Image: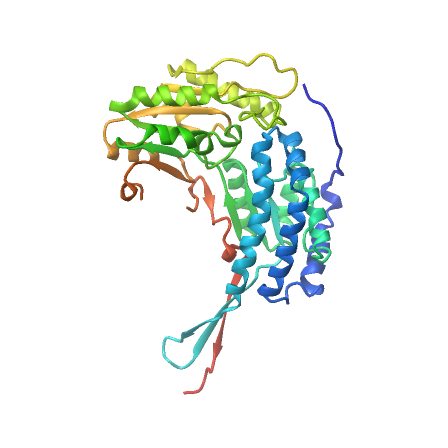
Length: 406
């Protein structure tokens, strides 16, 4: 059952004025002329303002997408921490790199300049998107309270047509997208046609490689955080567990017991580990994968059924599949829900091959007692570019100094 609890303005494609505000802020507010260390002052203020609103942001986000408050509380705190993190990095951008010209006739001064107006399109699991437009408005309030000039940060709410219009808008200098791989391919194609840079954080089907010497009791303590965080609605979690044949049954028993013991229920309850799916469509997608796994012969150790007792919310029973083979759909495709697959391997080389036998390349996990045996940017269908990288938001500029002296 769905219940409306808030409304937000809806942007139509012919109402997109956001680039005008952003362009004016970029060219006329003095913001781009501030040294990175001066901008860092604003970032620290913003972090303080976000912290003041962290509980409200957490609760709003839980209402929006069903993520348990123990997750959204961390996300709100992490937002403030990320602003402070970039504030510490900002001064490093002030240094120029001076390099000799190849023939020795001059020097080249290389620096990072702001890339310009960026269109940022985020997913609904942690960041704002069309199904989750409210918590970002609280962040926007924090931006205003921090004294950041008007137009530097703008919020647009709308559907995919609005996103497409932003991607193609002539006043946009760069696009950053986090979301599904098919959408990312479409955005990448549009940006390629426009010769516009893009950073794409896309899907994942990451593996957790359990080496024969792994401590399963220690693994149990971080299992959900590593493999089913946010009810499995996180692109980089390791939803495939690769287990050595000799320890397979023990590992299946541990994973089964850990998942079965984790409470599922009201996401506003701090004890809840598994909340509902964010949307009815996502719930139906996850249930479809569960049916596919059962049909292909995988064994559900807990889960595999439709949960009862929930009259509100789009719930899916957390499910662990054993006896999974690499060719099964649940082992190959991104599910984005509380479903784990456990596969056998006979050698580490075979396990690495299974881990790499996917269209994605977002991340991975290794469980081992030997740190040397456990040797992050997206590859393949997981995207282009790196999130949390300052250089993604800059443009390299080089100038010759002293040319013609010889």
